[in-house]
Image 1 (cartoon, rainbow, N blue to C red):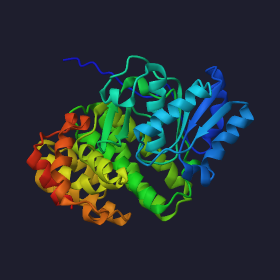
Image 2 (image 1 turned 30 degrees about the vertical axis):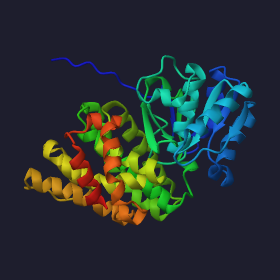
Image 3 (image 1 turned 90 degrees about the horizontal axis):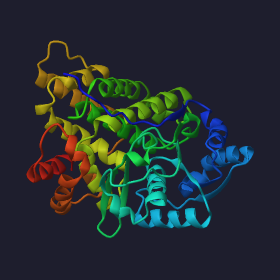
Length: 384
């Protein structure tokens, strides 16, 4: 039986050391005049944003910078950014950063063409019109937000992360330059790298997985296994950074088309309640959720175990699954991820309401095993 597929990724991608220097010509080819640069103040302080704005200056492209995006971008961030976009007569967005500036850039770009409030767009394909052109410049190897149709905005009134999956927010040009990733702190490198691993593994076992997404996911696992530790140990290792940039990008392409799973559903609640780093939450939850899911994933995790260096020859499906979970936990420990949620200040008294919200999260829709409220609370307890 023939199966039709709808595949999403940006029309143009620039990837590799120094590729950000090419964006001026691409922007001019699109006929764009003035950019709203969406980023955070840390990237401004350490000079990463200047590396991009220098290229814009050399190319004669006008811009205005909004640099107050929070680590978990809020509704206020989005509406303030939109006001600047309008008042400065911008006609496109350049997002510079990891997942937070990327998500904020998408949200601003969609509101610029669709109107309303950002909370109106929670869910799947809730907008009617394509966003303004977005040039998504990634500075971390993890979130892959520059390539996906997903974005997440925190409702500061309810402390819930609103998940949007919307084909209209796809970037016009995605840029993943490992030279913009060098020198980042080890803990950030570890967290974003484990985020990329979570993307790859969740996409691989997703109910939406198919041949293309499997190939991308497994190659991402391989590259992460080869390079994440080196990138954590030496933030200026350009070879390791380059491999991680590719790994993050193709893991993003995989989950962009296969979907994610319950690790993300649970992690979103931790981020919303406690304002915790998304990658760290994913890394802590990943082995627990995949152990739970393994009852429904057949023999797929055997390949993950093999790629991450485990000997699974002659093992049963259950034994190979256990080896895969062990390999994930060992990698997480080697790169310095906290062992449990208790180290992050998470409290058991919040599990029930977080579990209730996790069940409503859009990422739960492609998890390979059905999850109940009781299951979710138990998984939070295991990860504590």
